[in-house]
Image (cartoon, rainbow, N blue to C red):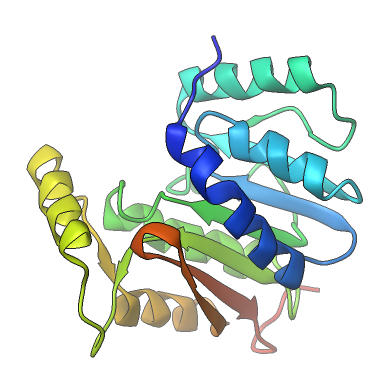
Length: 203
């Protein structure tokens, strides 16, 4: 029932350092595309004052998250939600922060569009959307390993692949979010933080 993603153990501490800087002190964090659920357990344990809402579109991922949740028995780790970034509606009415790791490059562009659209609807002014994963940046050489990874993704599905940071920033602007942080991370990944600005901000 439980799934295991080896990369989780390698990146969770570095991601937690970014989250500690960017997450609010209290509230609900919506994790989009939670996958195995290992991140959700670790971050719920690391940030006990925050309610951690894991979600995924894959029923097997939901089952894995639920199994980890039952095992760890953390009161602030909420039951997982069946949710895709491409869904028209989100089961939550609002979130105090959104976290999404390693989804944007392993999904069609419509998922990125949906993620930012939902962020624009769910987040209040100043609230963060935090992304983790590999990106292609202008004027920054792309690591050979990332180029090879991008080619392998496109071979699996032509709609997948590493996204341009410029294109992601443009999506954010359309949803009234502005990038406020960029952190280099292990294995040629980035942590990007977008915050809801005042234009048509949710209450």
